[in-house]
Image (cartoon, rainbow, N blue to C red; front, side, top):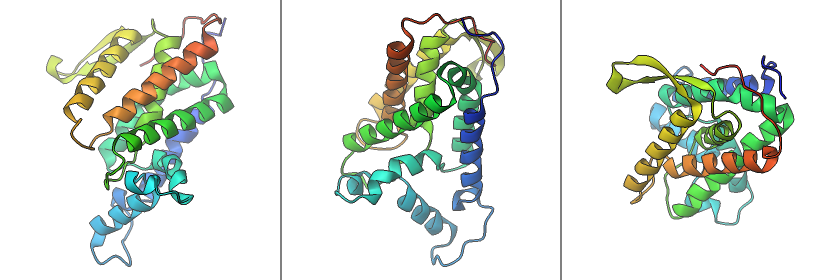
Length: 227
């Protein structure tokens, strides 16, 4: 049985800090002056994403460098809302998953699920020239693992159609509802790239399957509630 009080999730905090720091140092934050770009901030931001993000068409061209970009793209975000959304999900769900997996296994799991989610999205839209960035594929993997490991944990959720009233639900209900929304959105976006709903679904599925394969014979104690 695992202890009720979680140990300090060092890798979760490190991943969050890395995403925040890289965003602040990128043109997307709007904090740093832009030099050497005739198109100003918009051009500098596009160049930054094309250099370090996943460009599906070039990913399959056979060059070595593009194969690294699914890793670097995990730390890039297009705007503050994009960053805050991923950071909040990782903060709420990442610590307990890291506690169960261990710090090293957790960060490898995070990188692997994010990488494969990026590749699957790039394969589905192999001819696209739109850049794919963000930690959401890896974060979705964390959500999938959390669903298997702690389905009965209570999660505080806020829904706009309920006047932003905070309510507590079992994790399995919140995460299954979230996955259903991704599935519906992915079907609507099937005509072309945009928000990477497909990457979310792939990451979530990989995370759940990994947790099932790794921990299906282990006993999992009742966790401290997620918030």
